[in-house]
Amino acid sequence: MRFLLAFMILIHTAFTQAYVCPKQMESSKSANAGHAFLAKWPSAFTLGTCQVEIYLCQGDSSDENQNPMAEILVRDSKGREVYVPLQVPQEESTFLFTEMIVNKRTFHYEKTDKFYEVEFGRTEVTRLEMTTDWADLHKLKRLEIGIYSTHHKLDSLNGNESEWFVCEQE
View 1 (spheres, rainbow, N blue to C red):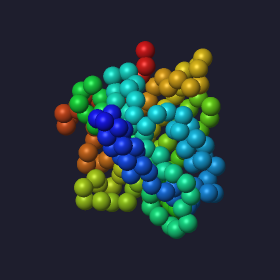
View 2 (view 1 turned 90 degrees about the vertical axis):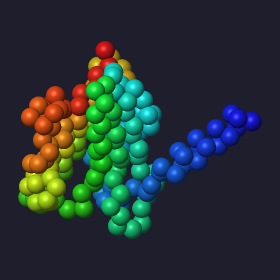
View 3 (view 1 turned 30 degrees about the vertical axis):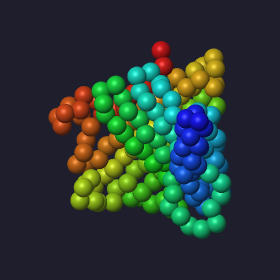
View 4 (view 1 turned 90 degrees about the horizontal axis):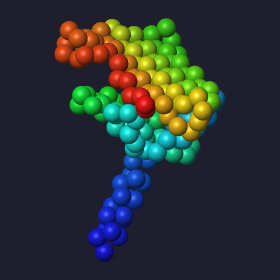
């Protein structure tokens, strides 16, 4: 009976975390390739000394929503956490641009936002790269995330040892 109750709670939780995909994914080959690349991994797993969670959007959207294509949460062995929503931009400009490069072995996502915000400052940059093993394309070898903003630099001056979150399978 306990097993059944735990299973029902787990299934309910899994379905409540799903959300619809943004409409702009329909016209973005790189976003669809990125979604397919991320779908190869379970929603929660361990990579090296990190705990990784990946939540993907589900299905198509008929409205103009601001949902991300995916959300990634990483906790490293030092207790640090980083959350990265992977947005598919509706439009690009000199102040906001996103790059997504996907091939068989690598998923690279980079977002630069140069609109001034009081909390973050003039610039926010998110960089994510996931690489598979050379011999096995279904084995994730490395995940790197870099977060930078003018006011929240991840460096040794404000208490962090590194500006990057690096998770690597030995």
